[in-house]
Image 1: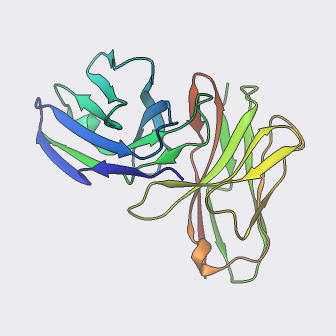
Image 2 (image 1 turned 90 degrees about the vertical axis):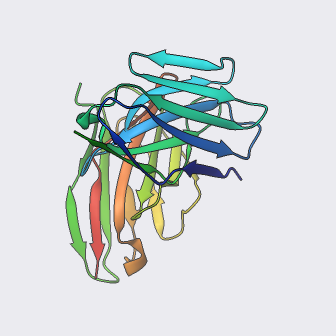
Amino acid sequence: GENVEQHPSTLSVQEGDSAVIKCTYSDSASNYFPWYKQELGKGPQLIIDIRSNVGEKKDQRIAVTLNKTAKHFSLHITETQPEDSAVYFCATGGAAGNMLTFGGGTRLMVKP
Amino acid sequence: NAGVTQTPKFQVLKTGQSMTLQCAQDMNHEYMSWYRQDPGMGLRLIHYSVGAGITDQGEVPNGYNVSRSTTEDFPLRLLSAAPSQTSVYFCASSNRLGQYFGPGTRLLVL
């Protein structure tokens, strides 16, 4: 089955700096790549996703890039703010966007 | 829309007890699923359903049963709770725009 690895497991940045989280996957059939943000005591919240027919997608301060040949995708957060502090998960799935396989998570800490 | 709702928020069970975790969504999504999240780990798929009357196993189905009699509801049953089932359980529903999670049920099995 699919295996998703996520790095780093923890990331500490200064407010205003950029943060990058990377994921690799094993199943070449995966073609849906969402990112979730999870705050303490809450469920994961979908923040951005990308499908295999595009290489990059941006939404304000967050962007996701995808390299299907190398089987890796990344989350980029620019101009980080303290409220960006949370655990971020990458995931992969099929075309229908369900049956997700998750990475292990990255705890992002943004220091004021 | 309330989105995805889960009850209870927190539950303590003794080994061998049974219980049902409730999940409901009001977005008319066909697809629903259950995940468990253990400390320091990502979410792992337990069971899923592609529509009313259809369920299937995910990555870690042992010890859990599900049913899907309506589009809105997708309960998860623990028949005989074990300490290894101590976890946080998330229900999700999805359409082609994405998968959306409930707030979770924290379960402690003693």
